[in-house]
Image (cartoon, rainbow over all chains, first blue to last red; front, side, top):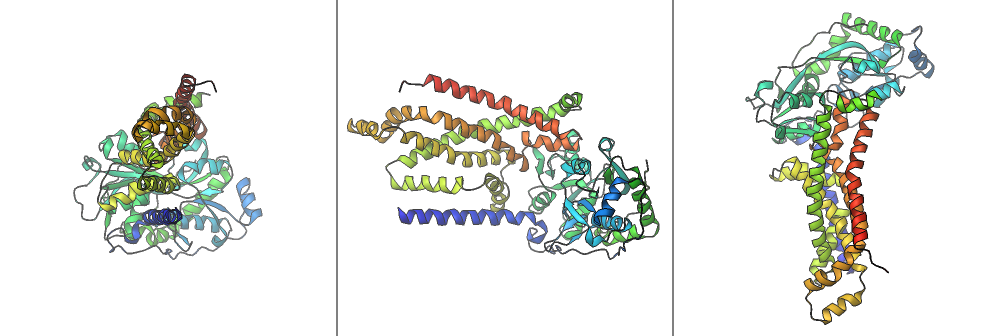
Length: 310
Length: 220
């Protein structure tokens, strides 16, 4: 019996170790899931734009700014799992288009970007985090919608995205949203893009695959378990830029998503300030520099979108 | 208050709730039947006179019961396809829940059997009954009585465990809140409705447990 107990313990541990190893792998689709030839671009590279904190900034009537000024730091809500958008690499460095926009705004508010306190807020909790004062502003593929404006307010848009498809490089059968019938389509659980696929019946309900994160979808795409990953093209371009030899973005967007900076609802003074700051970045080329050094690496170009002030 | 009911009536939200809970119930019924069967078999192995079977039963329980359910799911959804087996998410979820819950059912069955005094089994064997007869005619009927409450707890836990499948591409009750928050519905209201949904599903199970307990009650 004693030998048996020992044997059982060993088997248990071995099984656990195996299963842990098996799933640990899934979180890093870019590393070797594509058959070993995908470049491991997990290390963060910045666009090279530098942000010097402005001095003597004052925003009259902004309660949020009072807090930022007295605390000497700004708390920014971001994503951490979107390559070239909002990403944190294995060494803990953050980079990407959204991150650099957030850093630029911090510098305009008179805060050294190195002093930003980042908070990783999942999509579903964004309004709550802004309303509850957990963060000062949010930069992370945050689409401007009228419904969200009931809870918070938006500066921007600072980028215009649209729902698109990410497919394997050698797959020429998917050319747009109307060629998805019979193909397995993957996206994040309950996300707007997958709801659109479901509602417009772009593919059969059986072929809709939903995981908690996009990286799980991308991993399944490379493993040929799904045929397309769908969400905003900005996010897809980020993945495509990570392993351009394995994947491509179809490039036929079928929706319009205007990304805004999420701000507390009643702080119009801060909203105007952020809009002015974005406008300045559009004009002096900072925006372009940030884009070209991050999302632009996927090969597609973009220009700053017109601001929608309110 | 209008907000609260609006969660169900806005757009096709009601459809998502209905689809979600239908899938939850399907998942629950299939996994419950399979895990009860598998659990009974494993329980029988754990009390059987054959050492190999006993070892297998004990090994199964020790491995599976000590593995987080999420890992069982992840193993079936992400690792198994790498072996070349392609199973759809829904069947995979059924298998994951069955494999996991069976370990708990097995222990409930074993503890139930242990409540029957050894004299009962010995007497049955003295009458020349086979192992199957001893278990099926003498021991199990007495054991089932004390198995009902813990078995119901295991089943209720499993009903709630089905929500883990939401993370693995099964659109069930656990995924409803993801859908609703994308549609901008108030989180509190959504979660309250999901809770109400689960209460509605669990109450019959509780009532069933009461009924069985009363039916099989004996004066002690």
